[in-house]
Length: 178
Length: 216
Figure (cartoon, chains in turn purple, orange):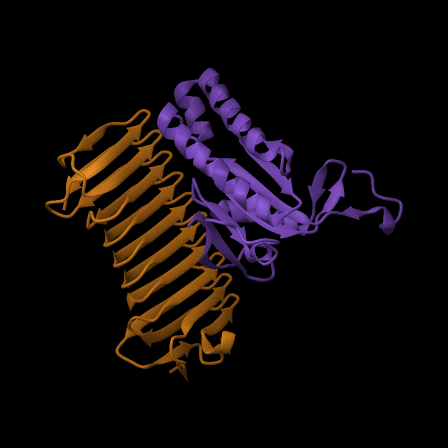
């Protein structure tokens, strides 16, 4: 990373950072072989691009996961739930284990080219670790900044979460279709 | 002897820890007692939350039966002995053992096993690497683990959804209940001793484990 020449060269962006993680991809590869695994990954990425492209952006691919960014917290939650509905349908119709976990946090990371870095990115990455397959976990920082009511979506409190390396506990919510 | 605190009506206990063990014991009493005594309990949210924090010391807290409890910790084990209301626990790497709950339970760990007794409401249990054992659930069950087995007893009245990547799934259903079962495994065996029915939906999926459904 080339350091900026002065602090004013640092550009931050406010928005929602989401991480997705495809559970069981390694085991699926070992059992079904590379070709089927590649098809699974392509199906996953295709669905992701269809849902994300008009409302946010894919920041980067991370093996069997993706980092996403949305300017609006509402868009992040709505897209995440639409993705989970699609993955659920595909899992049962096509017999694919599209077990995807999603974690969302809102903050102001530093933009480094197309990438994003900083504390809020780390928090979002930790949140996805606590999510179950098919689940969307959202930090309170995200639910606090919804710019409009989300029709048909409810947030259920998961409880306090203390994460390694983070000084303060955060409260997480599970986003669900009401 | 710990320090004792009276409980505002309707308050829940919130415990935030880092590395010490957290043990909460429910018993026939009306107040809360915390040990070590120098550990403080603060009242927040207009009396709705009684909160205590601990970094590395072990905590033992005695509470009345039926109290709602939420706990977040990094690496200490969490143990709840007795009967509680609703329970929410998260841990990064400690094991979690819960007694009985009259209400819902939401238990999650990144790398630790989860053991739950009798849950009267909805039970969610999620861990990345560790087994899950839930004795009996009256309501909905959602349990997921990446590498570990899942054992669940259910009343068979509400949806049961279980997923594991590489472990065995066992579901024990109360006598006389018949599920709409969707059982999937990519490489293991499936054994279902229950007749097909419409009493509740049972979804169990594993990538490389076996599935067994039987009557309790």
